[in-house]
Length: 101
Image (cartoon, helix red, strand yellow):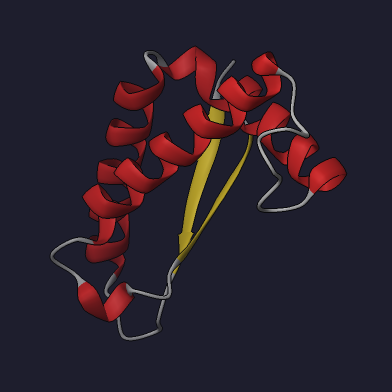
């Protein structure tokens, strides 16, 4: 499944900086999850779990499969955010939007 990625950041970030950060985020996310085709389904499943259990559910609340999805997405998102924003601290409050292409 293909997806669209958009970075929303401070207005003082140039378009070039935003595009470069988006690419770093995309690359790290796909590498962390294993393939581009996994991004949207894992993200969708993660967001469904957050909707049901909240941002920080106890491990005893989630099934083993749900826990795997939850931790897999959080690790991938952290790696992607670190890759995208590491050297660009002025974009620290940036937000990424992921949706179907």
